[in-house]
Length: 278
Image (cartoon, rainbow, N blue to C red):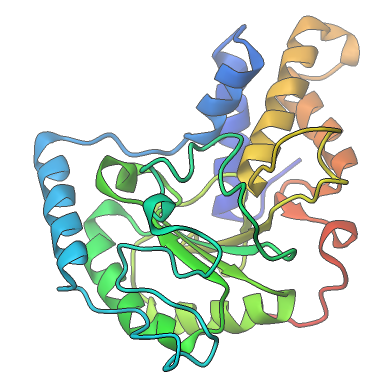
């Protein structure tokens, strides 16, 4: 199971870290996996994040979509401080502000059936430039929703997420963002699938109710993957008769869930045919 991309290597590193943590209950282990590669914040970094939040809230970093009438995709957003979506209330617009706990029941209100997602993961030092660029580019991207982390949640790897309706729209958006964000240093989002040769932009698909276990709450792609990994890691650590390390056994089992390993990309049984190429 040899990774061929830096993002694949980061995800496998995260799973091995989960094994090193030793016995934990499944929700705790899933949370540790989910937040892997979150940057630690010094006092100066935290101060800069607060200043960045104030700039975004004031509109100093630009407006995404001026109005529904002016938007070719019919989406509404006042600034980068809010979701770019018709189906998410502004009070839950920002990751880390209650709208996305990282695990479990985020975004439980009505939403589009297709949940293709692009993750944008700049290093903390690149945040201001990234948000400025996004404010200029996103009005030209056909998407269902946009959200970004705020405050200390900007230390997490998945700093911004774009929701699109199809694989073809995902590829179109990825190409635009790739060109606009060229040169931005990435942080990298574990358990998402790479699209280019670096870790700045990656993708996933939120699992349907049929994919998740019966009666489970709606879950994001990474929440579902890390929960499944935690379950398989816990089982493998209790049963050492598999002939391989627990982290390896967990990945082998995860491949049975229509997750392509080591890329951590959804299989076509989850996404449908993926004909468009990057």
